[in-house]
Length: 537
Image 1 (spheres, one colour):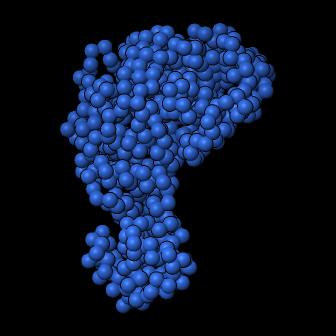
Image 2 (cartoon, rainbow, N blue to C red):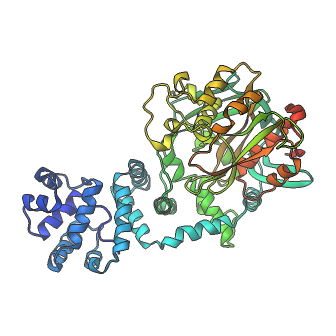
Image 3 (cartoon, helix red, strand yellow):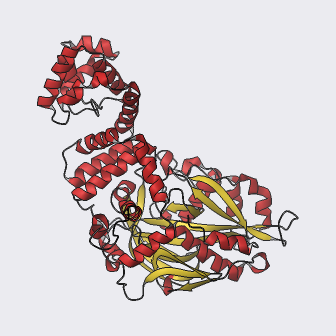
C-alpha cells in the first residue's frame, strides 16, 4: 500500500522531526548537502528530485516503528493528503509493489509533461495545488496491473463499424447538408464517424502551391473549467498512461477556429492550444463511448456525461469558434515502382499502411495510413499552419527516421529543422525535384471526426518517379508510433478490397484511404487496378 505519493519539503521535514535529527544528521543519512535539507524547511511545497524521492522512501521504510508513528501523527495533522493509516502499513508492503510505486512516483515527480498535465488539471478542476498528483498516485496504487490490459482488450473487441453506427444513432438529428461519410466498396457498404459534406470531398487541392490559405491567429479562448465527472476521467486517463507507459507530451497544437473548403481551395484560421488541454477533455470522449459499447450500456444522449457536455449535437460539433477543435492531417502514401517478376502486371504504386502502436494515445492498435499526425507548429507558427508543412514533417519522422522533428522526444532546438541542410536523403531528393512532375501532395477531403470532434484533412502523397523507390525504398521505416508497416500493390484489387473491409481501421484512417483510392483511380493510369469506391452523402 502507498505511503507517500510524492515527497515535499513539508513531508521530508516531518520525517526529520520524527527521527529527531538535525539538518546535518538527515543530510548524512540521505547522502545530500545540508543546504538541501535546510531548503525543505524554507520551502514546504518544494518537490525533491527523483533520486531523493527514492532515498526518502528507503529511509522511512527502515525507520523504527516509533519514528513511523511520530511521522504519521505529524503528517496527519499538517498534511491531510497523507492519512496516518498508510504509514502504519509500510512494513507490510510487498517490495515489488514498493518498487513499482517508486518508479511511478519518480515519473510523476520528474516528467515535466506529466507535471504540466497535473497542474492543468488542478487549475481547471478548481483543486488545490497537488490534489491531482495525489489522486493520480492513489488511483495507480489501487489499480490491478492487469486492469489496463483488460480494459484495452475490451476496447479492442469493439470494431470501428460499431463505433460509427452507434455515433450515427447518437447524432440522429443532422445539420443541414452534413452527414457521416459512407462509401460502397466493391458491393459492400462502410460507414465512418467522419461528419462531412459534398463540397468538402474530392478537393484535389495541391499542397504547398499557395492554395492552402489556413492562417495562424494568436487569438485563442481560455480553457473552460471541467466538472467532477470530467476531472475523474482525466485522473483515470493519466493513471492509465503512466501504467501503460504511454507518451504524454504537452506539445503545442493548432486548433481550428474557422474553415471553408471547396474543390481547389481551403480557407480558414487556426489558433493555438496544447496537447494536455485536448488529451484531458475532448480525447476522453472516445474511451467513454467505447467502454459503454463494450459493457452493453446505452450510448444515446443522456447516458454519456462527457459527450453530453462537450459534443451533445451536430451543431456543437460544427461550432468550432466556441469549442476546442484539435485535429490533424493524414495521407495515403503511393510510391511508383518499376515492373518486375516479383509483382503481378508491371509498374505499380506501393501503398503504405501502418499498424498503430499501443503506446500512442490516439488510434492505438488500429490500422491507419502513414503519415498521420496532429496539426501543430514545429518552429514557425505562421508557416507551419499550412497542411503540407505537417505532412512533410511527418514524412521525415514517421517514414525517414528523423528523430529531431519528433515533438515527443524533446524540445525543438533548431531554428529551421526543415532546412535543406538537415533533411534526410529521401526528403532532400523530393525537395530538389519539387517541380510538379516527380511527386505531389494533395488534400483529398475534409471532415470532423465525431468520436472526439477532431478536424481531419485526408490527403495523399504520390511519388511518380520510379527512381525514388529504387534509390530510397530501403530507407522507409516506420517509427515508434507503429507496430508494423504493410505494403500493398495498386494493382491488387482483391487484396485492397479486403483491406478496406478490415474491421481494425481507425475511422479517420479509413476516410483517408477511401478518398485516396478514389483520387488515385482517376490519376494513376495503367499503374492502378483499384476497387471501386462510391461515396454516399
